[in-house]
Image (cartoon, rainbow, N blue to C red):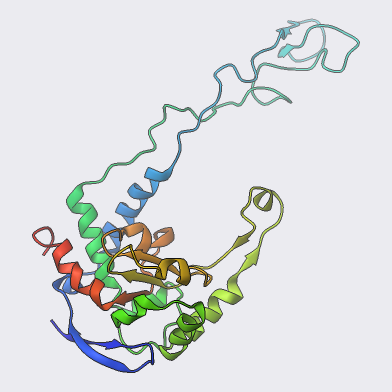
Length: 265
């Protein structure tokens, strides 16, 4: 495998590292998309309607001879609901024609080997600059792909230091893209707490979940942090669109061969 530079917080090349075998795998967008859709369904909650919803009514049809449609109508007179159609679909306050049912199967399964192949292919695709740019990331000034930084990055304690490092690594345009793309929402979305939409930015992959980098880095809009053992297709291809710009920690790269040993390679 080829040697790839490792960059420090000062933006300069610190050393070189041999890429794991996983980065030599072919790019398979078809497998990645299939696995993404299957894994995305695992977060969905079953939803259904009360079978009697819209049918708790005394409505009966007037039958023929009244010059009106023969739909069931609410009994009574001299009050607002009397004589109105009810208990059928397509009328005001009627039932839903084909409501969602709680027993519907929304959980899609996927073979273990296929899931690992999709994950491995997505990881390999992070080394393809053209594929990353097609997603919309502005990474023209990033010096190398896959982009690997030294392990000292995990010890950063201030957001200011992370932003400065991003600028030295050529990721400043990507931060500007995220800032320009933040959109305030109104109406029902805002009422439900989804007050704004933030574009997807870089993903930082660390060697372990125990460091404090996640709490610090995720204060930057669009940036997410995950450890290499928790990495999934959902992290690498959010929305099902391959593939996200990834910042690899040097120690995380060394863990990849161990994770996929004897499975794909």
